[in-house]
Length: 506
Image (cartoon, rainbow, N blue to C red; front, side):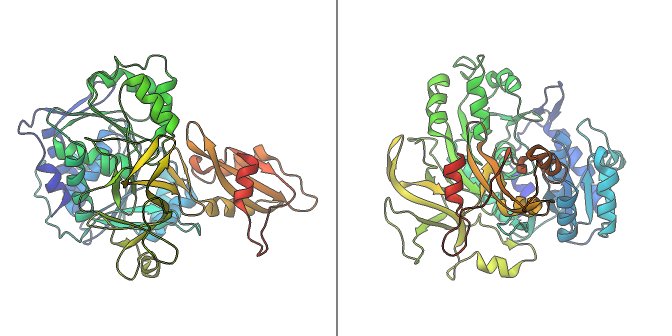
């Protein structure tokens, strides 16, 4: 049941065919993938790690970073990807919580990450850089390029993805080999993957979209990937004529529409554009169709569940709706009282299926809290079946997301939880209290904005506060703007009314 073995079944019969191409002119064959993952897997096995050991990885995107992920699967260990924007305080928490046996980081971060890792009793720290250098590859080079993939049970862990909670404490979502393989197989059919497809891959590979949706899809289909290190509109336009599939966050499509070189001719060979990880504005949906001749396919998923719902490949795609429930997945919308909602009735979205995660790492109480008595996972999102959007009437078997767990902000495809940011701001000298909100942004979907109340007599400098935050937390969490006001609006119970702040500062 090893996920790698399932993905490997889709590899083409010709092992010399190109599997990855980079803008630098590097070509990796399917044989290269097999050999490279075998050598890294042999290195990991030589370390005599305990079964179920976690391999924590914070490196820049490269083909070798993908091979490291696949090698971890082959060797039977648990892959733990970490956002490259995370700073010391965040990395310390993840390493102390997950207790990885191995940490792999960029050479430029080795000095401080290794100190954190060794202090937490991690035994091995390697480096891996985007230019094919680092101690990981140097050590792996002496090992055999053959490896028998380790057998795993379907309920064994394949990966842990950390997702922040509204309390500011990050939770590790445990995903099994079955969770990930079942979702990849469903999407292969639902999105019509076919022989000859070429995936244009510009997403990061430390979260679900880039790693478990995009890369898994291409690997399972035996499709070549054009591997871009990051979002670069000129590179997208350069490679779109050679591609048939692209997956991105709404920012990708906003940036393409702003580029005068983007047109129908560029997209003439494209079969499918997929958008996710943040809400797609109907304006972007409509404009993209007009300029490119293609209708973006929007879908909906979570770190804890991978993909749940998708607009159809064959069928009507509706702006403002995330589409139909994927085969094998169950979705229900329920009221706060637990009653099933009918068409156009707003309620809480709950799900279950083979894709739903095993639970939160070392948080049994939190896991129990997030599941209903009858086994449904509470997504924290609010939605409805059918109804109306600005694009028109939505069929009753299509889901519309109308809100999210109360405070969650999604900026550029990344989840930002206000409580975590507020805790950093509230610790600053001269700050009485703060409230962090998301406001609409044409590029990122939502932008992070902080509203701060100073202590009596204190004078706060917004720019200095933002600069301070940049050195402490990931850049995507740093507020784009800080507003200083005398007091926060509250209701009769003393609760901060963030809806009023959103109205005031949007």
